[in-house]
Image 1 (cartoon, helix red, strand yellow):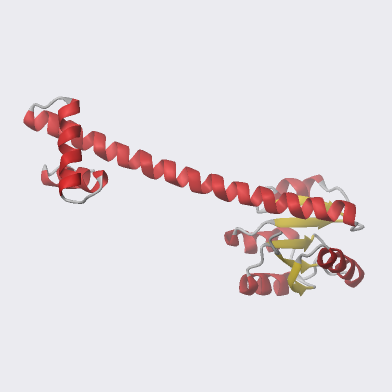
Image 2 (image 1 turned 135 degrees about the vertical axis):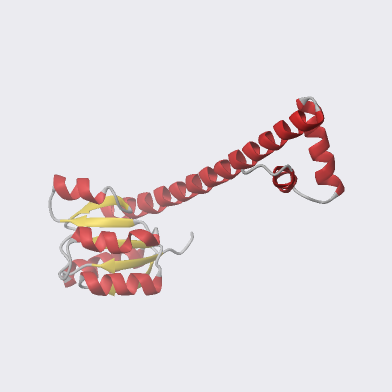
Length: 192
């Protein structure tokens, strides 16, 4: 089991102690604790935990202000709520909230919320990386297509001939196809 570092931002001492005890009993590490919004933001930014359990009733800042201040960190958050508030649920969807946990905190609900948040966050990160790679691949493909078109027009080549020429140039000079395409576009004095 991977030891995940969890930060607790819970204002109520009894709830914080119970949550901490349940997490430690199940082999989670507590990376830090805070009892108010500003303290939570400062410590989460310094410690960069794997997950934050955030009390929706922290003093000092509103829940949304706290979520906004942590949004750029891309750390999953389990939001601890006293009761169902549709407005808070709707507003918090724009941030890194991966699960909601109703009080009182019980092992039966805490552990699934934590695991779900960690797993969903990992899936989202993987999908983000895949999207980034696909965008890069698309950009390369556009450059290659543009360079092929220029070669076809300038030297009256077929599409296959232009592509073979580009691949040969890349292999002969230990370059990527992207580098060759960019050089062709630049040499033929055409903007990207």
